[in-house]
Length: 411
Length: 187
Figure 1 (cartoon, chains in turn purple, orange):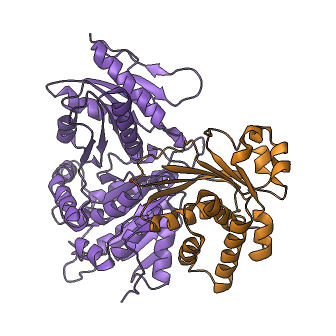
Figure 2: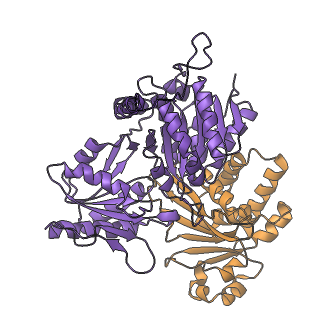
Figure 3: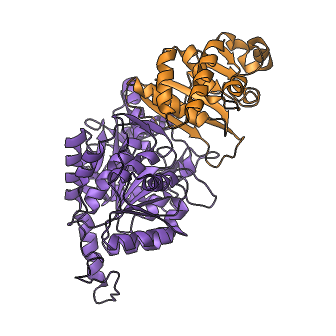
């Protein structure tokens, strides 16, 4: 029986500590980890909780992130509740094994504290690692602050372990901006949090010796495609389970999450659509701009990056004239990936608004309220002109000469 | 919204100080943020830590701010770092130094027109006397309590005891002494 941990109704936690408290309350059976900045405290704290008797679980230290995710797969296939955390290069080294976890339909929860990918070496937050995992067959949820890193980690177990989902889930938070920023966090009491998730009921667990099963079998052209199609369908069909988990969570806490979040969008002419902490900074900018200049600015945010919420994005942005899609990852010779997805959603809408792309915040470059205001005003200029008046893709917050690519071919 | 910028060296406890302050402020029902700009900084490297305090949930995640208070806990950084950057006409400065206020201001041209908003306290000496090592974060909190008028000293001390509860009693007592002395000595 685990020791009781003293919790207050209101704590001041950073995102890492908040995520580790969620792992404690979920009574995670096994964490297999290789630490990397800035996600280290999540697994470090889990180890301390085990050592001090707050969790009846096992902390396994391994030699690399590849081994960490491999160990998680073993423990999950054996029937345990399993989690770990990583960032950046660690995430990249896990990449091969991420696909194995989702292909074997194992409900692992991975806390990803987003950090730039080298080179140049950089420990600060951007979304390069998150984008690297976007085709890996995992559900991806995004937290915009420490409270949400905690809340979504709890929701993640409930979604992953649901028998109609059986897919691994990543919970993303921005490196340093969320992970190392202490803010007011209102935790659930231990029994309430645990009961919200419930006991894990494993499917085809390898420790059930009465019913031997094989994981990770080989399938060539005969069955591989069908497996992958089922996996894709499972992630597409997970939306109902995610929505239910969010609804139940709201009943407990009053905190309502949606796969797409909208702020000040009721009458908005121009919008920023964003991921992570940028969302909240942009919301402050939108409010200021409405008060100071009457620009009808709003913000749309992606809570659930996979499965990508095409219909909800289209619905949220249908009445907007010009949209700035913000990508916090170096696109490496293309438009930003997030821009492409939002554009695809809006191209099939009735209104087909103007869509522009901003590459920003790489390696933790600050995204300020003033810059968000500037971007909103630029969208207003596009809306007034009826076409995109700048390059379609621009770099925001870059030192040196202006950098932008592609002009519109539409009048 | 009250915004605070700490100037410190890695190892002097600005990050813990900012988080401790946030912890106490939160008990008054306010929303807080505490963060730092460091990363792979080594001991002795200059760093900045930040607090935001508001009645509403704090949405702004930018590092950029126009601080209401600038807290300098390393004496040399007052001279070498740009402590007045992005300040406002009402920004208050609390600077740790062994100099008198007049001597300090005379040596920092950027402070010449801000003399009425500069306060000094010797956090290094106070921490050496009480905590028995150079740990200027706790005394700075005491000075901040006095200058900001945000709390009664007793309220702050009671809540800091809770923040420090995992430490031995001797260390908690020493920190309480350090906070109280700085509260009384800042001028």
